[in-house]
Length: 195
Image (cartoon, rainbow, N blue to C red; front, top):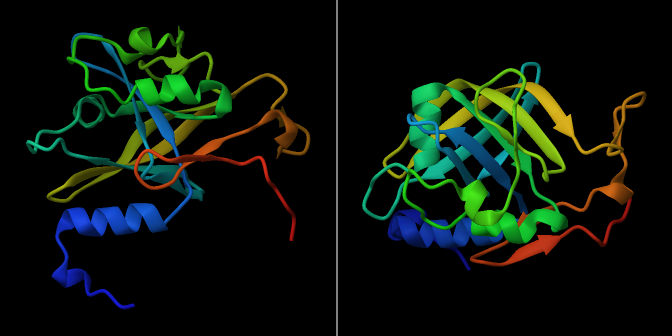
């Protein structure tokens, strides 16, 4: 089978690409609105881009009506955000943060997450998350359907015991991240092998 992407609608391209390029890590991002409300939302168009400088990328689509999502508005305004990686322990709460709530309602409260003050930036991090990266905007790209933020990582927070600091190795027995497949389907990383 061969498909010319020029013959497809943007939605058809999205469905194919997001269901084939899998599993995708999930960034649960916290930001602050102009009135100080903590916003939290999950995004699976996310990944690491490099280590020198340490940068990550998140691509945030627009709402169906073309409006920017609260996360994109907040990052563009303040230039700061926290990326949390999600594991099996917080997967249900992460998914609840994807609900479209009014801008003055915090998804952290609705999902039952605990905010913890960040060190270098204003948006709080989530206490229950196994990993959190405090980020500032390094570069922004825009398309008709998305706002893409490249963030420079300033600080890493990890669940106690997750990282062997002497070797910079992750204790994988203590880390069970989840990834996104197509649609509402997620995957775990229980079956692991070495090559």
